[in-house]
Amino acid sequence: MTDIASLKSELTSMVEAANNLQSLEQARVTALGKKGRITDLMKTLGGMDPEERKTTGQALNALKDEIAALIAKQESALRKQEMAGRLATETIDVTLSPQQQRKGHIHPISQTMDELVTIFADMGFEVVEGPDIEDEYHDFTALNFPIGHPAREEHDTFYLPDDPDEKGEEARKLLRTHTSAVQIHTMKKRKPPLKVMYMGRCYRADSDMTHTPMFHQFEILLVDKKSHMGHLKGCLMDFVRAFFEIDDLPVRFRPSFFPFVEPGAEMDIGCSRKGGGLKIGAGDDWLEILGCGMVHPNVLKNCGIDPDEYQGFAAGMGVDRLAMLKYGIPDLRTFFESDTRWLSHYGFDPLERPNAATGS
Ligand code: PHE
Figure 1 (cartoon, rainbow, N blue to C red):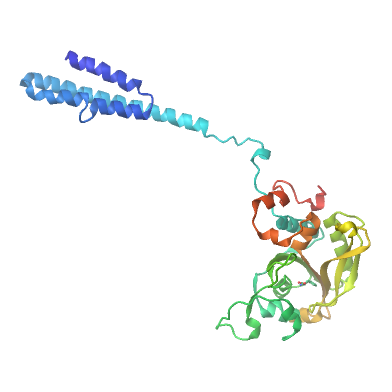
Figure 2 (spheres, helix red, strand yellow; figure 1 turned 90 degrees about the horizontal axis):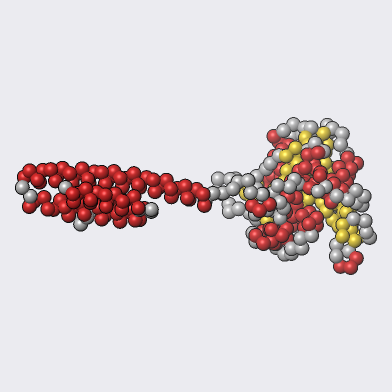
């Protein structure tokens, strides 16, 4: 019996001394394992007389239970301790200054689109949408490109493989070559007056420093009973001056041809190319910035709008080109290379507001 009492105190202090889960497991093996101390004593029971065997057996079983309970208690204490340690070391301080945490950047194209939306929303235009995959009818025919017209070829269109279920030439699917296709969707869905803007990806088979097969356009469309070219000019003048943040930015309009407008024009802004660099603002040179015009009566008719009652204007521009000009990015192809070093150089802080209206 003394043996058992001293074994108990020895095993108890061994379990209590275990200060991690590993040494506790070792203590368990030493006490209760197949070749453990208690098991060893159990093996001696066979050589005892029945009375002694009974009392010693009971005492050993009680010891076994006590030690097992003690180990369980110690284990839960150690687990708690370990968790507390991990919580202390692996904690994230959510109050850390955002300056130290900030990694992501807004892509210059997203930034530029935000700025365009901010400026035109201030003038009362509302955002609408259209699909990237169009058909010939929406991208060309309804926009007054006659079938077989060379302007269709000039768009370097990506056509989708023929779908045997779609009948007729106008149903041929393609990747939209310009956002103007959204004019058709909007005018067919909604009644005038309309004052909308839309933007997104466009596709043409073209690639060099200033062209990529996928690029972005932004367009506005206004349809009402009395808007004229003067309104269009005023609206676009306000826009470029707000966008480039130059109050006296010179502009000029040159007659130009787009099948879906009449008259059609291109707008240039003043710039200087002295010394090889390009500087936007007053200078002796001009830079083309967008296409525009009064919506062609045929386009209104194609959308079920009476051209004797309604008229309007549209203007479309390349978002990527605007971003390159405003932020001095020389090669368009770098926009789409997903290089994070490029993005952290040219990208924008996500917590800043678009600088359009704020001038920051
Ligand atoms: N869709 C024309 C283009 O891609 C731009 C444009 C839009 C011109 C609206 C006039 C009016 O070049």
